[in-house]
Amino acid sequence: MDEVISVLVSRKLVQGEKVEKLENELSQYMSVKECIAVTNGTSSLHLILIALGIGYGDEVIIPAFSYIATANVVELVGAKPIFVDINIESFNIEKNQIEAKITSKTKAVMVVHEFGLSADVQEIKKLCDGFGLFMIEDAACALGAKEEGVHVGTIGVAGSFSFHPRKAITSGEGGCIVTNDSDLASRLRALRNHGIDPNDKTKNEFICAGFNCRMTDFQAVLLSSQLKRLNESLKRKNQIARIYQSHITNPSIKLPVASQNKIHAWQTFHILLNQSKKQKNIIEMFSAKGIGVNYGAQCIPTQKFFLEKYRHDVIKEFPNAMRAYQCGLAIPIYEMLTDEQVSFLVDEINGI
Ligand SMILES: *Cc1c(COP(=O)(O)O)cnc(C)c1O
Image 1 (cartoon, rainbow, N blue to C red):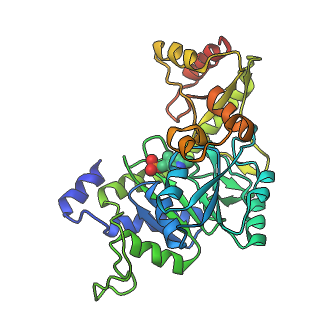
Image 2: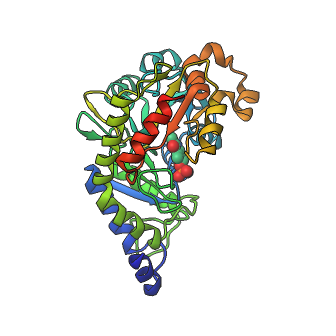
Image 3: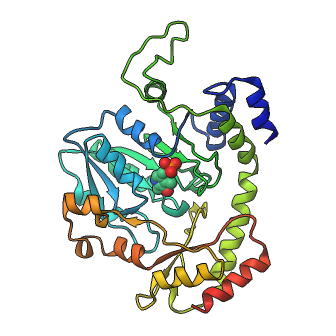
């Protein structure tokens, strides 16, 4: 908060040295060449698609189960989202079903590291390379997550992060893009700032039709200070996840899995209820007790706009995405939860 006030006093509010400092800290944290801070985790995805030249007539493969923004940005550039079902263990895109959806129009696979767990990106990257496709990473939920020791978001052509309050670190609204491709980074910097050439600071040359997706410096300092505590926070969430995994013994609940070669960021601890339990009733029942539980993400092809436009036979085409949408429950996981609170939650969940 002191840092925020010092930014306000300095009167340099937008896209200044605090934003640049944050970008350097984030690229160092993830061992990636470039970081571009933007307004939120939807604009970051949107800008990536535009910077890669994806638009009308193109197809982008995405998981059927994610936050809606993943699909909206594909629509907004005029491309067609091609949905692939998820794996019910990981809640991530079913990698074995991707290849069958590739056509001559496919330009990219946009993977989502759902709930903070890497989506087998090393393997999907190989598949994309074989077909000459971009792999884009929607890592909105996955700051700090790794696969085989490498930070997610840095494996594909570009990775997108969100700093919404629901994510690991927050500036209210905020997001960033990371990439090892400096030309792409340069195009993204132009798109973020009205199309101004980022490589020529002396002239205000407008080299493309850009947006205003700049971050403010008072947001940047909020993120810089939280980034210092991120590893502590991830450690605590990992502890809580382990307690849940060993103490939730309710046979009508399926627990999320963590893999050997991955570091889970545990942005969300997402359990699956037995079909006989009513998700809505449980959310209401817990809410009455002051416990915040909610469904985890949407089965996107069933949402009004996408259903009316594409008319997918969702039950048949995306059974796992439907199951995760209808039976999934995100239970509390955040660093400030005490052990007593966690054991109270364990008892409540075992009582479902
Ligand atoms: C949160 C989220 C977004 C959107 O991020 P905003 O910063 O809210 O725009 C996109 N994709 C996924 C998977 C998310 O969880």
